[in-house]
Amino acid sequence: MYAAKLFSIDIYCLVSTAMSNSTQQAFFLGRALATAVSEQLEKAVTEGLSAVGRFDAEQRESLRQFTETVFERAQQQATTATSSTSAEGQTGATSEDLQATIDTLRAEIAQVRVAVQQYRSTLD
Image (cartoon, rainbow, N blue to C red; front, side, top):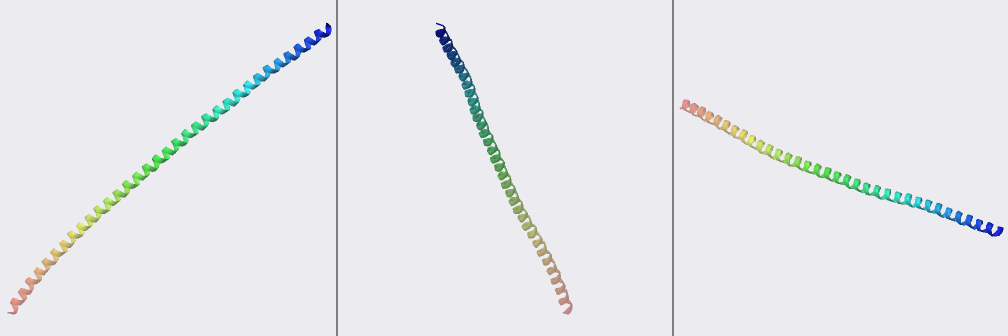
């Protein structure tokens, strides 16, 4: 009977130890699972935020380039408009200067004609 009692105590200890090991294994398995899930979630959130950040940076760069292109075109158009206005102004100024020169020459020609007529009349 004593041997049977010892045997049952040994079995109880083995079962208790096995149960204890199962509980410990379950605890550590749960802990490892929670850590792994946490790491995967952290990785997914980090990648998601990274993608949002990249998208934001790309959109800002695209907007900056678009704005720069618009300003360059505006400057080119302003320069073209200014130079064509200047050319028209210079053409007009040149035209006015040319007309003034022609008028001056006509006046001088008229004075020379008068002087030539006076000279001819003195010769006669």
